[in-house]
Image 1 (cartoon, helix red, strand yellow):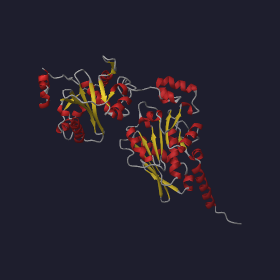
Image 2: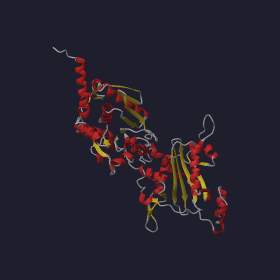
Image 3: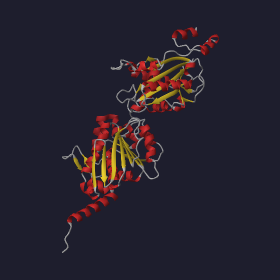
Image 4: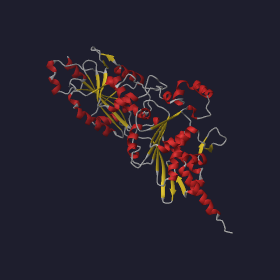
Length: 488
């Protein structure tokens, strides 16, 4: 009687199971993947896909670009991680990059990835797989080949230094620098040989996520509503709605349309491209000129404004750049001034928030001091948030002029695309309706800059008398005394 090599037979069985799981991801998830359930006797329990979850898994493995609008607490992040880990386990040398809102959330994705791997030793043995990792990545080894799962917090430069087989964007609508990240990521996955994106989030109005979900593009769009979880009843929903009020539509939408309703919506609904955006024109030298800026190492936002003699304001240029120390920020402003021939006209003020006068504990100097070193002398503006917002609304309020044309007191040149986009997209603070939200933070710098200008401009332009117009060509008036002399 032939002796049976039980170890060899066991390995054949494991290999066959490994091969089958490679071809059937739904089978693999239902038989080998865990999920955490805080309400279960044991926190980690076997995953059993609901019908809608099963369909979503198939979508994520079929389509290259995926975007999912979802209700809260449906396990969709776990679902996306299953798809990512399946790719890494069954495809040698692949890379998955995950991006989250914060470093803590990025580390949480890595922790979950390790939990998934820890609960399927038979499959790993079948593939001859071992794994290790740290708080930022998991490395899966199969012979000499290494597959990698890496997770990062979103930042302005995320996505520029990697090429991935799958990019996972968790709670995409709430990530800072979403637009910059997407601009960097798209070329890395837009390869003839492949590359997939899985973007998922609850809704946040005015964000790139909302734009991509609602616009006509190549994304495969899916929606998982509140009743995707079969345990949720109408009675449960009604009790939740009673506790949350209107926000239940945002956190637990029943339909995609309900999720996309204007809850916590635009702070400046009166701002429109048809009314407020104009092409550039030549600026008379006697018009008043201002620069308004919001500065931090994460972002310099500067706007260049002019005023005519009839109470009209125009933003004619912008700067929106990150990672600049004060001297570099000042250099950007000075170069823009030179391009605009700024000092040739009636130069007035550079308006800036009071925190730029905070002194460094080591050097005793402030950012305002360092801007002054570069020839930029700042004027402190009001930091009254709500009054500043009100001032912006007053200047952008549409009205009909004497010819019946709808216009506004503050117009913007179409050469200021960031200002235009972020004024449109900035949201109302859900807890303080008289001000705009500071999240997503990427939207706030430009809007802070506009607020500083609108609340603090002081002197409108006055057309000089004919006999004094030649003074403008020969004398750069910098003081209020000089201006008053000219206008007498």
